[in-house]
Length: 301
Image 1 (cartoon, rainbow, N blue to C red):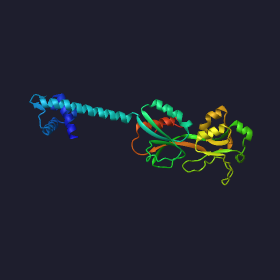
Image 2 (image 1 turned 45 degrees about the vertical axis):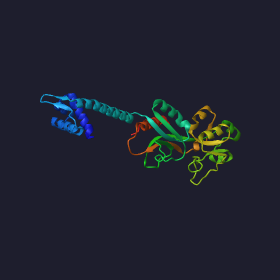
Image 3 (image 1 turned 45 degrees about the horizontal axis):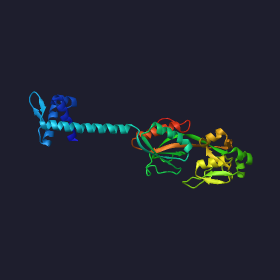
Image 4 (image 1 turned 90 degrees about the vertical axis):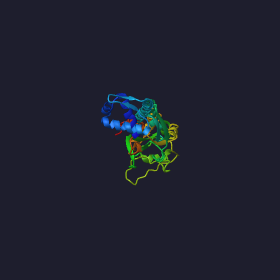
């Protein structure tokens, strides 16, 4: 570092042609400039300037040293500028873990890619609980209230569950009017990969001990599979409303027992706490907050 300071002082003296002028531009005294130049000459073992009472001029060795040192300082400045741009421009690989609800996130991800072409998205779709730090993820999206205090969280928004079936299935089997009517229907269930447990359908109960008998016609861990089975008249399934919004609007699926659904779901973005947030992560969180689920939004603070 002392050598680098010597380079800077030497270059300033060569440009100004005066210890006094160089000192003024650097904010130090002329004597301090002279001492730094003298230390540099002693270290190099050559004289860099011809000194007189009226002026200073470069020696041959000084001219050679000026040429080389200017290159070095220019390279350092270019490196600093590159590092500054890297730290302020969203770019680089961003590893993201997302739930298997592609209909919710794919349009937003496609638009994000178009807006930030210098960010390389590395996407992992899974419903299991991942080790964010241990597995090298920059950010994950998951449902439910965050429980790990070591993670930062950004609320994306709420969604509602719907029990849905095809009109043809309901015409054949009859539409349930009460949750207890589900006992006579084919029901398509979701199994959590991390626990192996079936998802509990969020039906209002008349008392805490009440438990509805909901038959099992099929179990899987994939949203699109259950949508496909429901569209093909295979039964009733419980799905988040955003995943079947198009089918409900088109009438290819219809919802049942809406008045008995009592629980909303939620989605959050989670990322490791501590340290400075890189630009690529900041713009991803801001973008997804504004584009995933209605009513969510806002910037990361």
